[in-house]
Length: 131
Image (cartoon, rainbow, N blue to C red):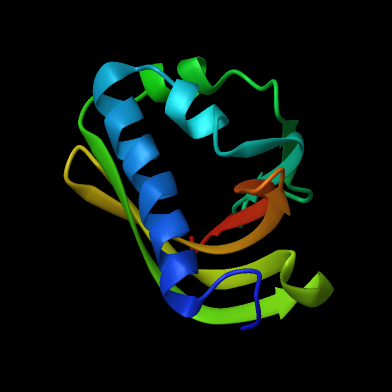
């Protein structure tokens, strides 16, 4: 990767994002999650029972999502990283495990991170549950 972000750097960004989620599951506060999102953020979430993915944006009710979970945590594994836009954008593919009340819910993800005002912000995400 060029000047935009190092391989180590994208792992650091991902670690921070997933830690924000894990902290949010405990506190039910989404500020740290939203702080990592671009104001133009677009997200898509789906599973095998849906014809079309649910779509959500920057202003979606993250606190409502967090309040649905008692004991929960997220972890991830990256399978591919692709730099785009001369280092100003990074596409990350991988797998996440959402552990909810001890039950794993695996999903595949695609995240698009974009450099905005010197900070990496999540521009888009697509989450597809494996089941």
